Length: 301
Image (cartoon, rainbow, N blue to C red; front, side, top):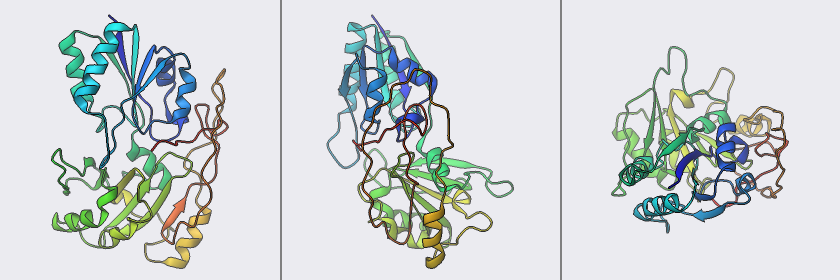
């Protein structure tokens, strides 16, 4: 019998995995990976067998019962099984069901934490989720219930909604019904943490305008204090200033030193496109496990 390492890959680009996560991945005999993990991470475990068990909303996905069974089966046959999850494994990652399955089979496990999409989205926009005197609480919320029903509430100064990208107009209505003012600021960020990340600024009343811009992309919606402009920022609706801000925004990650001994995969980035008046495109970078000098691009989400 082996053991299972739950490794949080972080959101988007490969260099957002932690050092502990990278080391754990390198030990794997088998990797069961999610749809939103960067394929460049395969270079950290080149000899492992990689098994796609990805889930995506509104499309074909691996059933959770099948993932649970695969974890147990592989752990009984291999020494180290890595369950590679996007973002942080404990945030909307179906971690509980998989831990229960392992516990029932008597299989040991370890959880390696990571960066969740809400944190990457805040870095992308340059707007902190908490604000002194104004944003003292943050709620991470999945907009979709198990039955596929869209839900929204008002439980914190900053609400971050996961998995609502395909229903932004409906989310706008639900937020107003929950007591949010129509002019409450909202940031929408898709593919947070990737080189082609997009962010757009709205108020709740105009949130539906973001639907086409972020269509088909994993999307995080930040509502309230954490979406409010900083001093000197452009207010939503100031179109000429918004276009100016879009070309001057800094990249959401600092320059860092490559990890010693890391290899360098190279995957082409996306082509330039007209992103519309609301959009803020991340500055061109080369990304990967060693920081911006390391090239990687998420292709499978």
